[in-house]
Length: 362
Image (cartoon, rainbow, N blue to C red; front, side, top):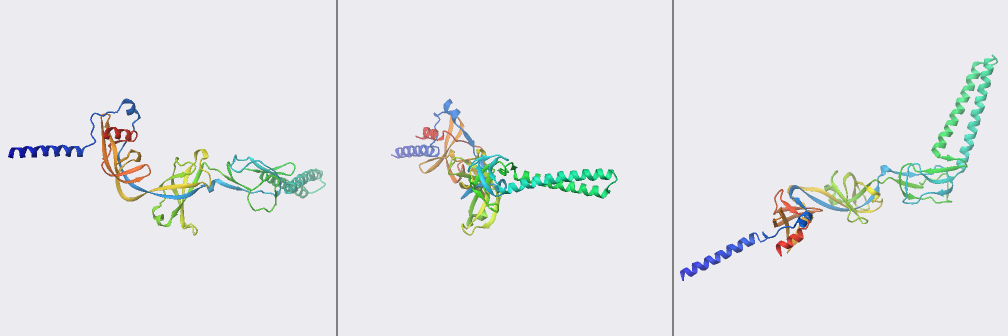
């Protein structure tokens, strides 16, 4: 009876030992191996220790760079003959935006004719004075006076010519409104046949160069102390929800808006293809170091969530892939911080991981 009891204990002990080993490493499957095609499409990433960051979400708007935006004002009043552009059009520097027939331009034309006539008279007077002086019939002061009149008339002609250049004056009392910079028409308040007063103070066009734009984030009071110059920003819009525009906070406006109760922070963004338009609503994520600690960081898409637990597939070679349970500390965008379960430089699978997980564990 004693021997039977000892044998029974041994069997139970062996059984418990076997179960213990199975629990410690239940994911091992030495018979599994990746096929050639699966191996080619499988990607990996190295687990690396990185400073832990956090992320805050804010709402804001896309705006044009104020340094690359110009208001266009009519320099004269008159009747609008033609408008060549519409809201949203791209224009080049010097392109004619609108033409205006103006009585002010008619006055400039009269001044030009008068100035040229005065110059011609002054030159003739100088010629006569010089001939009289050569014949001893007048004094040198008369010649000097005639030269002064010529210089005065030439100055007036030059002034009128500069006015013509500034006002883009054409024959027929026509004034052309031209684009001072290349960019997009983002505001337009002029139409054909409109009558513009010569004392008008409002602009008729806004032109913005938007190869670079600003995202203006509204920062809540409770988060102001976390936003610093130079922190990373990811910007998305309703129009392009899957496209992330990356930038950094380059200016903080240290003023609270009394209406929104928020402070604004500016993120400068490159705008290839002019995808971002002024006044678009934007979702802005700011990443910052919240605490002085470092943890293992991996791509978020490497995580397999199953049975209320998080796993990663640790890759050693095509015959040696391990299912490893990990503890997730925090997910920040595409980066997941791991508090336990991984070591530096271990390779984890970032593509096909779900298929491999099922093959090994189901």
